[in-house]
Amino acid sequence: FSEVDIECLLILLSHCGRSLRSDDPLALKEIVLLVQKKKAQDTKLMSSSRAEYMISAIMDLKNNRRKKQDTVFSEKASKFRKLLG
Image (cartoon, rainbow, N blue to C red; front, side, top):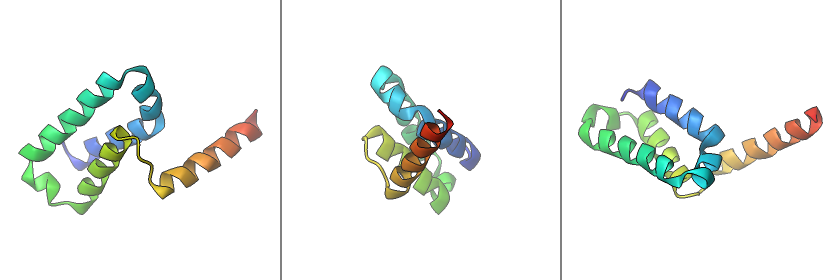
C-alpha cells in the first residue's frame, strides 16, 4: 500500500463504512486486517505521520469511535441533505 491507497480507503470507508459495518461487519474487518497486515510489513509506510493518522482513523471506524471532526462533518452533511430534500 502507498499513502494514496490508504487515503482512498479512508475516504471510501468514511463515506460508507458505517453502513458496511452494519450490513457486513466481516467485510469491514477483513479490510482493516489487510491494512494492519500491510502496516506491519511496510516500515517505510509507518515512518509517515500522515499514513499513521489515516490508519488510526480506519481503526477508529472499525471500533465505532468518532473523532470530533467526523461528528462536525456528519452534522453539516445532514443539514445539507435536509436542505436538498
